[in-house]
Length: 371
Image 1 (cartoon, rainbow, N blue to C red):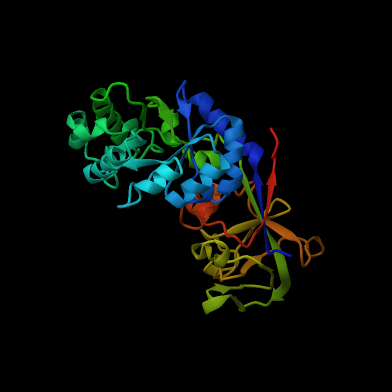
Image 2: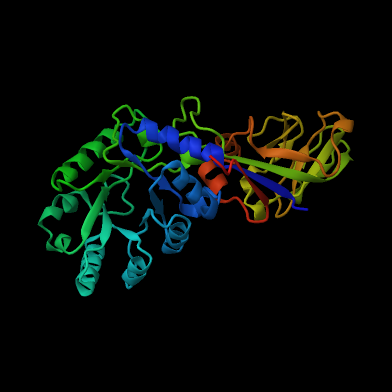
């Protein structure tokens, strides 16, 4: 009865994690499972990754961390978005580790540990170029002199690449050098810099732990090369109605798409309320090559026609033989030749956004649950 069918291949997820682990040169391979495991579902993805051998997980929020902890009770769970004031007790209660990115956070976590008489673990984040979260590099270099570090276990020193997917970007070397300098002042502390794309850099900045995210779920960590990852997500949509429109008819809200001749239109039961971006709308004329959404019908690409609306998308299926397509049939919106990165490109965004917006109205099926 669902308008969209979302198939998630857990065997491919395991395969991707193991491939990244093997590429990490002996470093531990963690898994980033924030944003509901990039839309695939924390409750299913985390046990799958744990089964594959993953022991460390990263999320953005405490609420996600609690779910990850329940899904993998023996794992280590880090919360990337820092320590909100007054939340230390929740971390201790659920055995979670904050990623501390300021002296204020370090001081609060240290004071909490002193009050409990226990050295709870945490990570420290040093900003080497993102200018988003984390201590500055000079602050990082001064960490060795901070008395608060005696009050808790500094389990991990980490930073985040700005442009690791651009393998020749000089900022990569600057970040690696800055991070290495801070690390040298904290001997014995484990270090982590590489995200998905960072694992593939020629400099091999793997340190002690790598933190793949997007690549786990089938995204291409090397955009200039063939994607080395297996596809994890396939999305299909059901056809609600098929109709012919005549020359000079328009399709969709605001009449932004014009039929230059008689065209057959399929209306799909998926829209932006399901997380498919409105920016994939096709605004122009039939036959015009537009940077807009597409679907696959029996492997053949068919372009969107008109604006994506809340619950429906219209597609020009004129080139598909009339008897080959009927009401209730499914078409592919993600999968096959429509890889997640291509879907993002056609919507004027990135595959990350497509994945993390996958809606809850889809009927979800999980494949490859064993192994």
